[in-house]
Image (cartoon, rainbow, N blue to C red):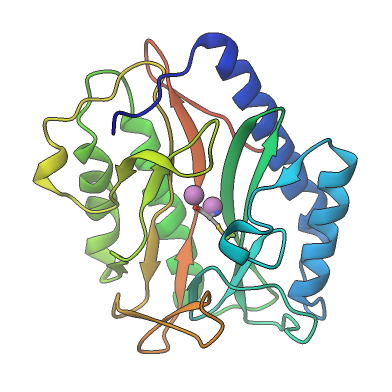
Amino acid sequence: MLPSVYAPKDFKRLRAAGDIVARCFDFIAPHIRAGVSTGEIDRLVAQFLKASDARSASLGYHGFPRHCCTSRNDVIVHGIPRDDEVLRSGDIVNVDLTLEHKGFHADSSQMFMIGDVTPNARKLVQVCQDALNSAIAVCAPKVPLSEIGRVIEEVVTPHGFSISRDFIGHGIGKVMHDDPQIYHWHDKKFDKVKMTPGLVFTIEPIICERGNKCKIDADGWTARTADGYLSAQWEHTIGITEDGAVIFTQRGE
Ligand code: MF3
Ligand code: CO
Ligand code: CO
């Protein structure tokens, strides 16, 4: 299937949706600290979306029961917020939020470090963010889609961390998950697929402290590293413009 191409007026709406995501993170950030449950984070997200004329695209998605995903420590993605999961000093946690506003979706996730985290956890979080930012920086018309994965590998591999191959980035816009598929490792099959203006997609590398294999909990959602070591993920929704890329979910603007 061919990916959708979005017009400049759609980019305005994607930016509006992305702004709500960014402001939601600003709203929840001060609350994400030791003693707070992931269930409480979900309630804060729900409260913000309600006040912002936005709908969680995760709630009810294939039966997903909450407004956002909260993935702590060895959970790599799709952790379900729970009242009995209380954050403690030393935890690293990803909050992933996809919303729909006036028919357009925006999707972003980021890591939070709780209290005193180990140097290696801090490094994992930082390298993952660097990998995402480096990948975004090369996005522009005529650039092969495979550059994204190549750059992420270039940033991550020297540190000895591994890249999950079980989850990928995706086209997004009028729906949450669309073509193209965005791999976070180099794959030659995307060497000939070039970015074009109007393309909108997420980049969302997951990197693991040790092995990249994962297992799914009995709840059918929570994906954890098979070896129990940490993982981290950062995600933005971006759009290809005539001369580069715009980050719809950029914070602090
Ligand atoms: N936000 C996720 C992504 O990056 C999708 C979450 S779907 C859910 O693609 F149902 F798990 F919430
Ligand atoms: Co997401
Ligand atoms: Co996504």
